[in-house]
Every structure is written in structure tokens, then in C-alpha cells.
Length: 301
Image (cartoon, rainbow, N blue to C red; front, side, top):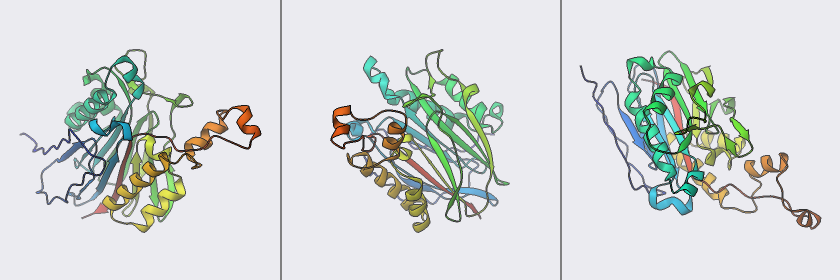
């Protein structure tokens, strides 16, 4: 028997496009697939599930095409969510970096309930990657919630996820990099990483926990204490995802901001020329990038 599916695409997204809350029926699966559109997914399951808010703001120079990040959210079982970040270096070869990340997320959305996936992040990443025919590459993070409260996470690259409980971060993924600013990535080229190179985590969650997932445009520009403050003060997931994206975007454009990205760069030996150091200068500023944020609260009906 066919499983009912609702899918939504936003082909020409804007930095602040808003979707009104949706009153959904009770299908087995409802998917949202988009590049830049805040919204909220209401929990549909009687056990633990996810109430999700999303918001994305493209790089200022990439607004016309909606940026190069992509995401999908599904209510299948406890809830599934993922972010992919298209690698911008492909533009130097006249390849649109957004095509790979968009198709990767579309394939993940289509295959999430495939029997061969077995509700496993590794299998889903593998099948979605194999099915992607566009040239390019992307980092990816994917999380699947079991209704009993087990969150399964697969990550390739520097997209990230943080789990908050009672105002504290109790778990965070670790970025995978070959070297500074060169993350692991799935690619159309055979020499790159596969699902076998992914980092996998299994975390127990409980009602009231908050999951913050995003592209590196979020975590390169927003400190943990800022994430905790916003999520704690704003319990509405749509509102907190919007605020996190706006803070990240603002920091990314601030050339004087001591961002997480600038601190890491200096720690790894990247800084201003010596003559500027003599004048008391140092490398500062956020990292201008696409910003994609998913905030999910663990709830029960």
C-alpha cells in the first residue's frame, strides 16, 4: 500500500521567506524538502517525536538561487532531519554547487522509508549518495529519532548537531576535516568520502530536550553560549531557529567580531601578516556563508 507523502519545494527562496504553521492530517509520513524556508512540523506520533522549526539565510551573493545549503525534515517514525552544504569550490569549474546538495537531500527524502535503509543513518546516506547524479560535493548531517527516545546521527564533514537539556549542551558532534577549512564531503568523484567515512553517534533523548542542527554557517559564527541563551529564552522552535540564523548571518558580516571561525583559524596558524601584528592587528571577523538552522524539540503527544 502506498504511503501518503506531502513534499514541498522552494525553488527561488528568499532570506526571510516564512511559511505559516500547517494543520496536518495524520499520514504515516510527511516530508518537507526545501532550501531556505522557515516553518514548523507538528508532532504526529503518540510516543516521542520531534517538533521542528527551520530557517535559512543564503550568503549575500547567493540570494538569487537560494544559497547552496539544502535540508529535509520528515515525520516518518519519530522524525528525521538532515542538512547538506554544497561545496562552493565547484563554482570554479562552472558547476552550480547547490545542485549536488539539493539532489542529495531530495534522494534522502525519497528513500527515508525504503526497506533497505532499515531506518539507519549510514544506509540512508549511502543510498542517497549513490542515487545522486549531479556533479559536485557536499557535507551532510542526518539524524533519525526512534519513538522510544534513541537519536541516531550520521555526519560527514562540518555540518553539526548539538543536544541541549535543561539549558546545557550535553552532546555535540565533532567536525571532520582533512585540514582547516577543508571538510570531509560526499562527492560525485570517486576519490572523496563515502558513508564508510562518516561519524556515527547514538544518543538517548527525553521529552523536553532540544536539538540544534545546522550547516557550518551556523557553528562558525555562533558560540555555544549564544545558542544556549537563544534556545532557552525562546521555547518556540520556529522562533529560535529564526533568531539563531539571524545572529549567525549578522556575525558573519561583522569584520570585527571574534567569531568561532576566527579563533580556530588563529589557533591553527592562520593570521594577518606580521607587519599588521606589529601594529596590534589580528585576524577577526565571521565567516560569510549560507546559514541553515534546524531546531527540534523532543515532545510526546
